[in-house]
Amino acid sequence: MEHLVRIYKKLLRETDTAFFRYLYHEIAWNNRMIGIRGPRGVGKTTLMLQRIKRDLDVDDALYVNADDIYFSDHRLLDLAERLVQRGVRYLFIDEIHKYKDWSKELKLIYDYYSELRVVFSGSSVLDLNKGSSDLSRRAVMYHLYGLSFREYLRLAQGIETPVFSLDEIVSGRVEEVSLRTPLLFFESYLRQGYYPFAREGSFDERLRQIINLALETDIPVFAEMSATMGRKFKKLLSIIAQSVPFKPNMSKLAELIGTGRNLMGDYLRYIEDAGMIIQLKDDTGGIRGLGKVEKVYLDNCDLIYALADGEVNVGNLCETFFVNQMRVRNTVSASSIADFEIGRRVFEVGGKSKGKRQIEMVGEGYVVKDGITYASDNILPLWWFGLNY
Image 1 (cartoon, rainbow, N blue to C red):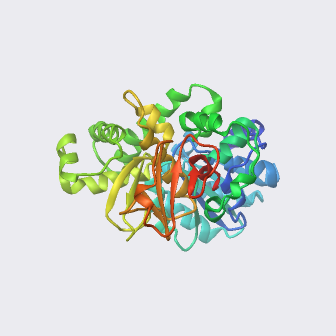
Image 2 (tube, rainbow, N blue to C red):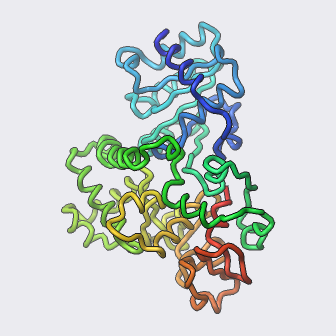
Image 3 (cartoon, rainbow, N blue to C red):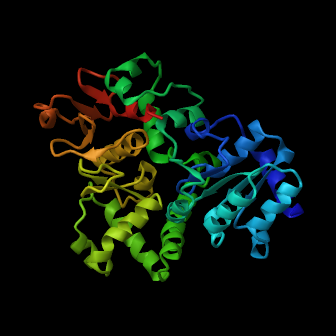
């Protein structure tokens, strides 16, 4: 256990508390058991260490990584017992999906040790989605997304801007923000702004590692597939990356990657849960519902540039940014009239030359354009929608 404490204190010393992700202030930290899920690289580890460094006594908590060699011959349940005996009240467990039968042991910890508060996180959203159902009456679950454009401005450029609701965005409240050269910052964000580790160097290599681990390890291990399926998932992601935007034909997809058509729905869901794609559905279900899948996007614009084979399509880039940012606070669905619907509002999204034709007969329709700084009537700048969280 001394090894775990030594590593914990080293990581705590290295943790920066100058910038906090949007989710930090939304978590009800007083709950006895909290789960934080989200794709690799979005800042879950930092979030937990910041909670300790900012708000807790360092000796009253312990952070561990479930992938540590310590757990090859020690149980989480036994660790929890030792901590309670020492009077430690907070246990933070990272990469929980690396620990076999983790949800069963967390249930026992919750039931046996009411004095211990547990926060756990995992990068395999697939495993956490499954395990959280076992903990449904015990753990409060949160999802951490990558950086918004607003967070990027704060982290990478030192620029503070308020959060704007969708109502405030469409009403033009963002005009009150005094922001010089927003389009220059926005272009940088689209290329390397979604993942916080972009500032640490070797961004392209680290992003490739995230893609490979998600497709070649996380999904096959979760679904108990052979390693060769990882290569098929990478091919599927490549097909989506080269489409503008991608409208799924399950039979054609199955033929291209050499698998059965009936399995394609599960495969796309796995890749979505791994944080690699977004499936946009019709208005019977939105992103989170059960409606028909109308379009498939890469999860974020960083992935588009990482997987692009040649020139990036501007229209696809704009649509990806819009749905990526809006899904955090809103239910986004495909529109039969334009690109997207959010509630009663319809949005047509594209580059600077995007016209109004699709929304001329719509009661509350908006054209969302890249390449403009200010609004004009119902034509709104795309970058505004990155200030929503």
